[in-house]
Image (cartoon, rainbow, N blue to C red; front, side, top):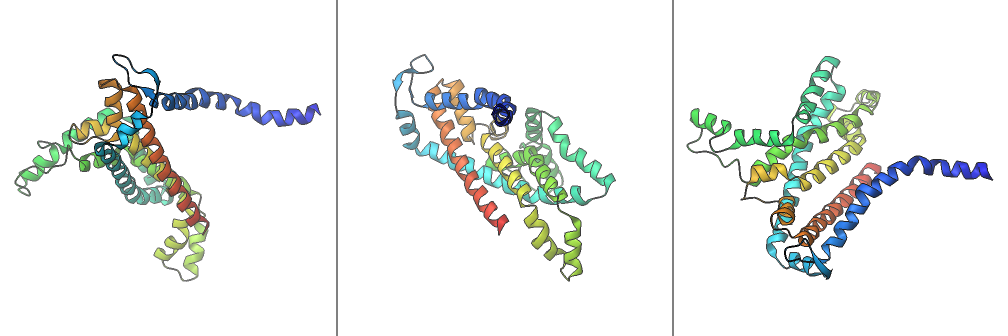
Length: 285
């Protein structure tokens, strides 16, 4: 009986350290945020005594905050789609390319991760500004008369976010393609399928788990991005992450900031679950 109990307790003991860490640093902080979102606003303090639903009522009754959620989701969708379109060919080349080119490709893909996100964002301000490198070059060549609005708008934020999060799309897709047996594509070609047909019927469906993982990673990171939108968007474009930080730090509205953070988290989680269900159904089909 003790041996059976030991076998049952063995796996639980193995996962106990991870479960304790997740509970201490993820579950409990989230529960604290949930509780904080129902607190009363305080006067000179983070929150007052008692509980209320007024924080959520304030959020859903103001079209300004609803529009910010929509804008944040839109930026997340576009960033994810752009990373997928740009990242899939790179991932395929890294997975199927020669060893010499593969090593160079790994270095180029991973190089942005070696630089801090603040430095990368400042680098894009130098490139995208009205007097930045891109506008000055185009005006110097006589292609445009005035600077293009590449900064302090959603376009600039998306460009910078794509650069920041592109590796998180490439690496999962590359791993999925590496797990596909090349003989499957060769068999399809031997049966008369073209390269495009073999890719569409074999490679693309089998790489769908990597696409799913990459899209979820990039989408979630885009929704929660703070540094890049705050530097590239400035005061003209504010995402929900920037607004939450402003509420928590600048105006000291911890209950309302927690409510906004939870609304963003729940909204993002809904879209992630829907995307996961749709891609799993497509993959199984």
